[in-house]
Image (tube, rainbow, N blue to C red; front, side):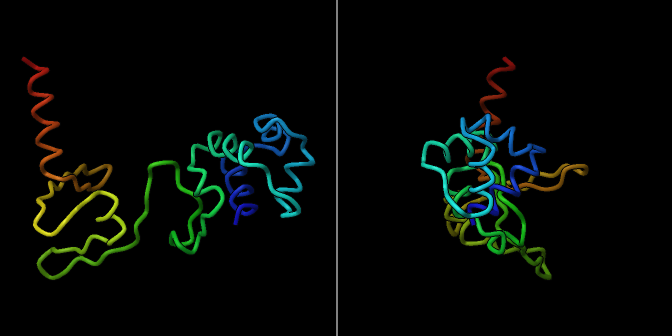
Length: 140
């Protein structure tokens, strides 16, 4: 997992092993050994790598592409919860992991936002209204 994530993230960020070695304060050979799975860095080096790639330390070390529709490690704070199917009346089921992370419970009201160029988004109604009121107050 770690070695595959390291290779994928290094290539995604168009970095050489030398570039990454400079970030982590190690030799290029150390990076090569990490990528070959011959050794692993200490926690401080992992933290530096995660910061350089803007991913969580947990994702850097534990991410499995098969858990993310085959995709690589997502940037910190970004999530792909899977696919949903739209029912006959337009209803969708929000994946359990998303409901837990965003504290969405049965009966909660959600605002559906849309941008023809960017897509759709869901937001808890109370958060949206709070944000809207803050913007309204700033305009006064």
